[in-house]
Image 1: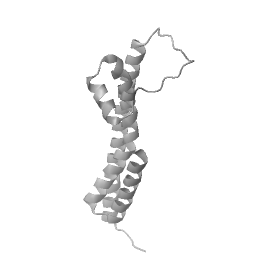
Image 2 (image 1 turned 45 degrees about the vertical axis):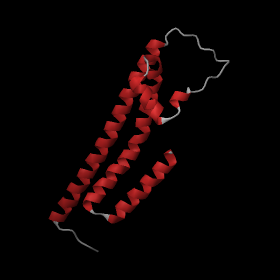
Image 3 (image 1 turned 120 degrees about the vertical axis):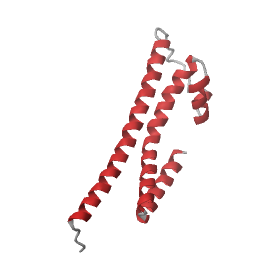
Image 4 (image 1 turned 60 degrees about the vertical axis):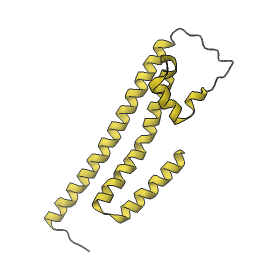
Length: 135
């Protein structure tokens, strides 16, 4: 069994602390951004649709403009307020879904900088699985 001296233990502790800090920062920023976007879209939606009677006998699915990522981004930026509110809510959900993917990407970058090939392979594999599952 390999014994680590005090200097090696401090180095390992500093590297883990740096990785933990980066991962926590990515998760916090992603969650905060997603909450802000959904909250803004939700407030605008409720403000705009207050007092509207909803007909529950007829189901209307999502509009075609909210069924692809590029349309959602385009609507969130360019469309009128009516289309923008639903697009903002969808965009916030997309940011929330993308947050764990960004966590894996940041792990992959950190492991590449450390030249830790085992974890590079594992992180790359997890990233491929996540991207495949989300497409």
